[in-house]
Image (cartoon, rainbow, N blue to C red; front, side, top):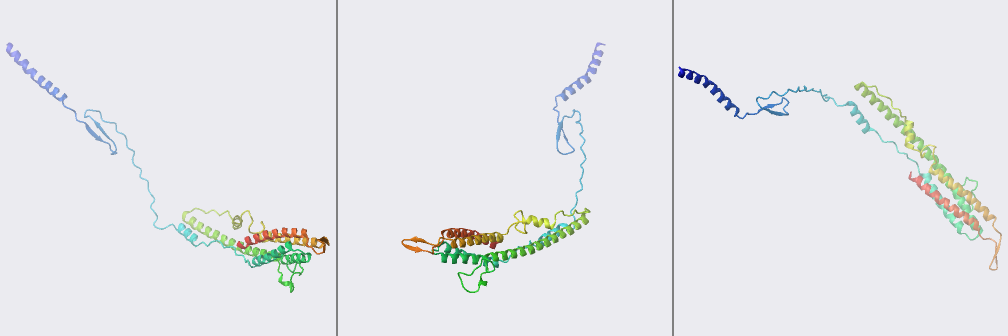
Length: 305
């Protein structure tokens, strides 16, 4: 009887021993990691098989932005603008006739040569002739100061530096008027063309073009600048030179008066000198020479413009 109980007990323990042995075997096995690949393809995670699943991060859907396809037709407004700029003519150039200026410069050199002779003259008669000839060349035969003393012949040959400068100024003023009119016409034509192009662009884009605020007159004033090279806002070089010549004429006339009022005689080494030159007139003619030299530089500047 005892043997039968022991046999039954041994048979009952066999399954328990088998299960225990299997459990111990499973705990000694190295667990292999399981690789999870993100749906975005950017990150990888490694989790053991018995780990809880990683939380799922919602991936925002990709928003596809519709890109505007290039137009099959070229931009008509841009092409028209480029063609206009390519065909746009440069502003006209101010052209002034310099004939009167060249003649004035020649006469001025002749007057300066006579003034130098008046400075170095020793007797009053020669000094008076040189001073008067200086006035003749500067003033011209139509001036009240003109007197033919140094040369004979027809006085019409004395055009005068001052009248020639006045003529040159009139020629420059006429050229400036024509230049301003030509520039104004060209600027107005550009403005009309830009308005037409803006209207064409507005018809394509549906945007109403705004009128240009600047006018042709304002643009011309901007080109002239604050110095007043054009118009009547400034003094032209011909006017500056003519003013210097006028002062030289007045100074030369004063030298004539000094010659006439000089002392009428002096005793030098036992002889009577009744016709000596005036030192005051010589000094005055030196001042005249300096004025003529300044006028000559201004005339050269005017000839280069």
